[in-house]
Image (cartoon, rainbow, N blue to C red; front, side, top):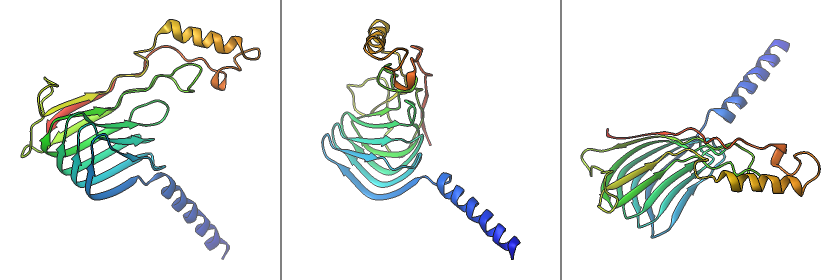
Amino acid sequence: MKRTHILRIIFLFIGISFLSTGYAQEEHIARLELGKKKKKTFNSRDSSAVIYIDTLIMKDRSSLQFYGKKDVKLIVKHAEIGKGAFISGIGGQNNASDFDIDINLKKLGSLYIVARGQDAMNGTKTDPNGDGGKVNFKYDPNGIKPQTDNKKQANYVYIDVSAGGRAINPVSDLNQIYSRIATSAPGLRGMPQGQVYSGSPGREGKASIEPK
């Protein structure tokens, strides 16, 4: 009896651990239509997401935005996308999301995939400059073939996987640090977690666009 009770506790512990770490946000959407400048956010507590969309219609400058997602898998069977639409993702610690996108483009103005690292911003945030994401963009060859050369022409796709920290001005960043320290108690108490982060940028991500 005692042994059986112990085994039950072990299996319960394993089950709880699996539930807490083994699941991603998984969602199937039959039809998603976003009007001009409208957005759809995915911000559940799961660290990854698998999203299936049968029909996706994105008007000009509309967006899909993922927050707190380390990995995003997006499968779209039929997509009609206007001009200046974008898909973005931010994971944890200023790092961008990694994207695995499988899409059938039936109409395409211009689409931007934004998976760039965020800036550390000393004195404000508490993580170093973030890394860019890894983006695999696979399109159905039976649909539109995207081009990456001319953003003024139709069928344009651009993937931004730049590292965080590249746009920071070192002089203004140092001035902000000195100001926070000067107006705080002795030491580095004026800085988040008592830390000053290096101005070194994060790591550049990787991107690929190819037929599936």
